[in-house]
Image (cartoon, rainbow, N blue to C red; front, side, top):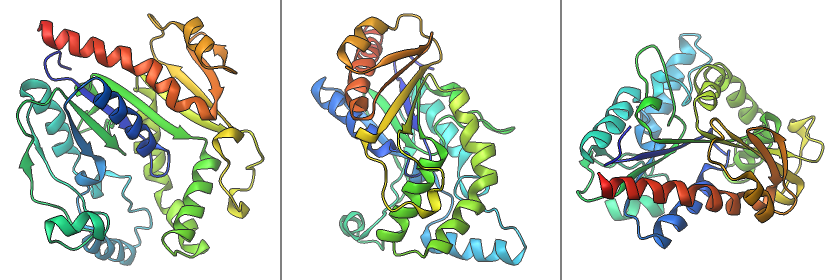
Length: 290
């Protein structure tokens, strides 16, 4: 952890809403004139798209039916830990980009599904902002979480997560229903062992809970909207959190535990603005004093 070079990490599985959270933070950075080094978690996958497809086929031949992007074999956990540590110590580190589609790949003259070359973070950034699968991962070999100053978990209830994945992958990626279900089952051991534990070490968690029936996610035809959801916000350390103020600003919210509030789903972005803007400004003030 570092006062001079703070690290903020958003962690959550694919489809959890981490990209929406990233947009909220970008609004804060822009409004407060903060120069953030943005790091996407996909850039720390071990294999590009073609290599991953080949590796999955090889693992299937070995009867390993649980090889996935959620686990350590498919990711560069050591390099991610080194980035957090180096940035905290000196405000630098090596990063790259994963080019998801043709639009992202065009400026680099590379095929989609590949990585750009590694390069150093430019000098003079105010903080590092990570969004991806493993911002708080801890294993017997690495501890990424201990190098972050602010860890935020974003996770829907499990049935809602499955609904989002099923509908997104079938409508936007053209996968069959059976293929998406196979992916869910293949990822499950890594989800239990490497994704879920992260939410036990985060400082703040946001969990979206649907208020409609999702008891069978495999027959759902639409994703519950924000208005059909509540968001549970849990603070690991509630000291200093002005709950009466938050509840007064977030109409329809309620206190559920001494460290938790539940708010209407459509208020999540506003809640993040109210909660994290003061935290980030305190980081910048400590940075200046340091």
